[in-house]
Each structure stands twice: as structure tokens, then as C-alpha cells.
Image (cartoon, rainbow, N blue to C red; front, top):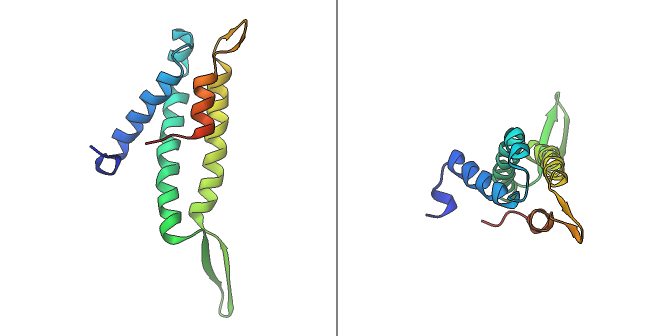
Length: 122
């Protein structure tokens, strides 16, 4: 089944599982406490993908009319949301990665950091 055939809830669940796998080294108690953050990150990831598709179709600039004769263009509402939500997503993922244990040779964050830098590939 392709992602196009999945509902938003199914996509979020799939993303939650992907993030949980990236956090496999995290203390189970910490993971349980941060379950809402994990869900929020997954929801944001799926929503950002939706916004990206919308922006690809409609563009990132919207026209407006103020009053009788004042026209112009501005950043589209989707582009505004994308900017805000992408910052929230990055913040949440950073918070989660900071909770991963460190070992003597470096961080156990490598898998999550790879996920962050390469993006969610579906």
C-alpha cells in the first residue's frame, strides 16, 4: 500500500513507529514520558508533507485585496504554516535526540540525526 492510499491517522501512526525506532536507545521510561512529543513530531512530519504538496500545486505566494484599489501579493498561508511548523518539528526532534544516552566514543544519536538530516523518506 502506498502512502497515497493511507489516511492521515495511518500516516501519523507509521511516522510514530519510525521515530520510535530511531529512539530505540532511549530509556523506556523517558520514551513513555515523551510519548506526546513523539506523537506531535509525527503529526507535524505528516502535516508538513501535506503542506509541501499543497505549496507545490498552488505556489507559495497568494494575492490579496485590501479595500477598493489595493492589491498585492504575500506569502501564502500554507507557506506561513510550513515555516512555523518546520521550526516546531526541528525543536521537538532536537529535544528527543538530546534525551538519547551518550556512550564513551560519542553519541548514540547517530540514527536519529541521520533521520533528521536526510528527512523522512516515505
